[in-house]
Figure (tube, helix red, strand yellow):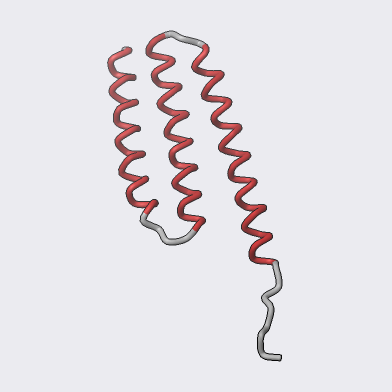
Length: 94
């Protein structure tokens, strides 16, 4: 059973790598943030699969910490992006 979980974690890592190549080419900041979220989600999945396969329970704490950090990063990005888009544009036509 452990070998199957390790194989699935390798498959998840491969899919994250393919997704990151696709998303990193995006020109906007939102595309780059999605790449970071994809990396965080894939990292959590791999940590949980490897932790279950090896029987180490401390990996769950690391995965939960990574999930909380990913949520904070996403909230910070939305707040920063909203501030950039709300600032008035100065007009030089005076």
